[in-house]
Length: 442
Image 1 (cartoon, one colour):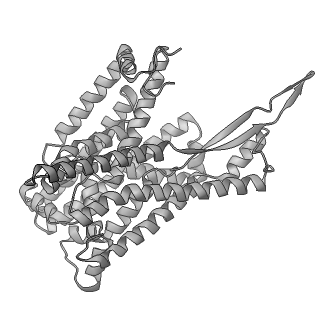
Image 2 (cartoon, rainbow, N blue to C red):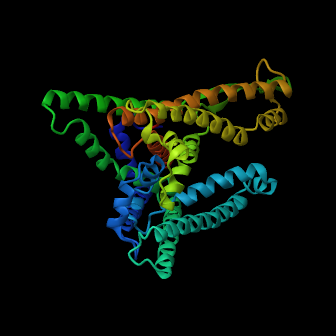
């Protein structure tokens, strides 16, 4: 039985559990190490030169990448790649389990999942090496390195790959001995570390130099928008559809046992933040390639890059570039359909229901059940994708209309809310083992 439902008492209950306190302290210390490492510059890189180059880039993908690295990228620290190679590798491995049957088999048992983690780690090293080489060569050709020699290039590549490996290792240690998923916790901490700078940018843009009435009104609008987005994301992440399931009854002697109602929870936003990341990365790829190559395309290629860049959308002085937002919306919906279609198999779910003698009321086992599950999936994909677009586009609209250029956007907010909710749930499960109430306990 839970002792209390109040949040204050729930927080006290968390601190009453020695194991949770130890895990929280361990996680905090590791995250401090991560932030200290983010301040160590890469040998041979001129920070001032690179900072000037980064400031000259109007590239939304680079802003998002810098936010996910906690500013390590713009400072060119040894953690400049952060844990993004591991995140990319995890997504690739998840997609590969659908394509390669042997990987799907590995994913089903605990030993196989450990093997999959090894494969993901190796793939992350390969991806970090590719990214490091591409960045290093680009900086070498543009003479952004303090020591513009082949040895200087090698040092940069080795430092970037080593930094990524260290962060992956620290993330795994948090998962084992701390709270939450370590990779997600590092990503969350990196994003949150940029918030003070973003709030300062908002203050300088909308409040600095204005009278108290205008500044107060601007503050109220900013707070209202932030609160709305947080509440909306929480609802979007927590919302799900209950698909009713009926378990077939069995005769035991003279009694009928079974026929118990159940349900399949189907998340509204089953694809999470992945469609937004995929769509944003794909649209920003041309401008990123041009930036690292040190080229400034003109003519039609230059106009295409401007259309694809989020920094040019909803700008009243150049409304023609806002067509990029339409392309972005189409890509988000398309990636949501694609990702959900490969992670949710209605045929497999229908077969499992049939094997255990369960059925969805009003739908026959087999083809009808598959068609119903597919229709539910299609409906929720649209709702989830529209929700993602609302969250992702609000900061872009404000940036275009009012020039509020902050690294904190809809993508960052979805990541923050998702990681915090999952971490609190994990902590609650440990607290409830001691018959105490957690934050989400009923």
